[in-house]
Length: 389
Image (cartoon, rainbow, N blue to C red; front, side):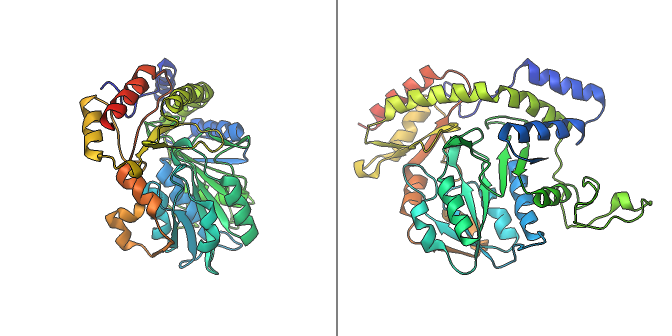
């Protein structure tokens, strides 16, 4: 394909790392995972990193951990404020743990939650906010953090699409009490599958480690406060204290992740060069609404919304992209309220969702990759200009 939606970012170093692990004979979670966790936490200046088998699992373990805190745990029926646009597994753990969702519309130009609607979303039962930075573009995380602190709410940051983005000199994925990342094939770094949880809260870190591996105590140091160690007898190594899961990653994934993390700054720089070209070609053209950069985007992809004021012919545009061999898809998961699964949710909608519906119906994204895309982005501009005349 002339312009791929996703592209590999591996080189010989990643292959060599996998070979080294295979030759070691230790394939499941072990020293490579521990080393990757330490290096990832250090990159972000955070205390704890817990690797899991996907970004979706990171969300699941993180939400679960908030239900087992000793102080102020979440409870079924509590409310959580969420944006109308994100990936499905931002929302599923909330439903699975019995939370009620309060959906807030997004800003049409950033595609992130509209912070001016937070007050309207707040009720006496509100206990948390889920912050999502869409496709590399930081949400108003500073505003969300301040609002959460003012009202005694947990801020849970789903940063699965925005690794290495920054807001006011601070990395996204560090604003929440829990912060999650994804290392899927097409993401900023790729470990095939894989994800990470970051936190400065030691209790939450211990809870996540137990939940990651069956709810047992084996990965917990002594004196966590989560349980009282008994004698070191036959049963203590297989002691279960939480209703956990098997979310453990592989040594292969962690070894690749360590290489990719070292390469992340150069890959982010390449993505931002492509973003600068995209912005220069599309800024100021009122036919297209592109993401307004909030802070410093790590540019997962390039979003385009066909401006409804210009009465666009969506099918003509999509046909032109296909004819030009340019890959495209819906923005993240689109507006979650438009999916069949919403019938299983307990939720409210705060005000209207006009912007999320416009992005769902008239929006799409094309890929960005950690290498030069000048020919592809230039051709994209030519195709859309012609299709929207």
